[in-house]
Length: 441
Image (cartoon, rainbow, N blue to C red; front, side, top):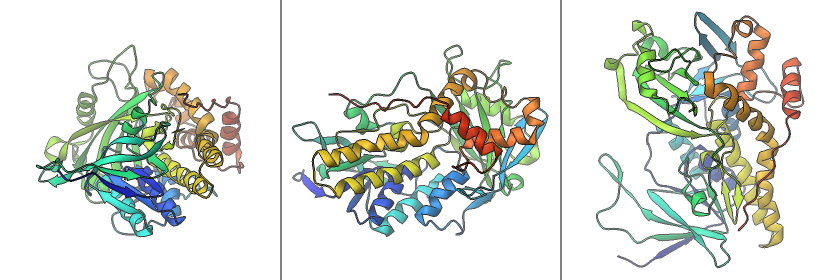
């Protein structure tokens, strides 16, 4: 085994998913020497619905990603299915966001973002598994330790001869290492057990009939397997534009009912769909894959001792709809701004004050909205899913439908430009601001 190696940078970003690549891109554009470490080798699979709301599209546009290139599928809005009701909701025309969504498989979506960050100047290192943070005598993060992972015939595997670990040093580290949150856990930043963790399962099907659909389809009337109770979540059918659709379920566990058997629920649901859609075993591509969805700011604090948490590592998935890509992209940009500003100041109290403002800013943006969403998840979604809010009164009112859609997807202009904006923004302002938690040693 060779001797320990060291690499230095201004900022280290661990994880090249949407959050990490966004942070690395914005840091590189600010002239910061940023090192982006990713344990996998692109392209790679990722459990996701692959549907992007206008909020996520807005962030891609801010990053300069070419969303007109081949492979991107545009959507006009959402189609909600509840019993015999099928309603269409167009994406709103706002001043702050585009009026269209997108679909793109995570198989190459993450690769596109990582390469985009690299083209901006970030140093991308694939095949580096970060094992733990490196701390100084005061317990502050001064880097990470990682080992190389080679790509085997069936995916990443450990090399036959263990490589020497490399220490990557930087005064600021951004953790974008996903739901596992290894770096956060190493600092004792535990998950809030009171907050919900949803689960999702998805599979691809060859379905030429549905692949070119202009709407992201959501089903709210699904049942728990073997019962008459509504699934505490929803199902989706998202067109990919390449002859396939992404089909999946997302659900919140409830203490009364225990864990939801998503694969059984998925099979029972797809058996109800028209045969012409092709959502049958013989048209499936790949296995059913599942993942955990940490939601509603379920890990605190978002900054501690030189480590900033972004995306799933900070539990940033929306408790309203399970969306995580838009939040990851936005949090990456905010974290990059905080890190770049901090580096412009001398090491010490002034720099620390800037970094401590990162969770304050994230709380300002989403604190009230997530607090209200967490309450809705606890009282409604985890018990009966979306069926109670998609009742006959709501489905029969275009105004209520548009208002509910914009609430669930966090699409409003600020300051308000119309009645729906005013109602939603006022309701959120009435929610008490959650306290910003800070880790004590």
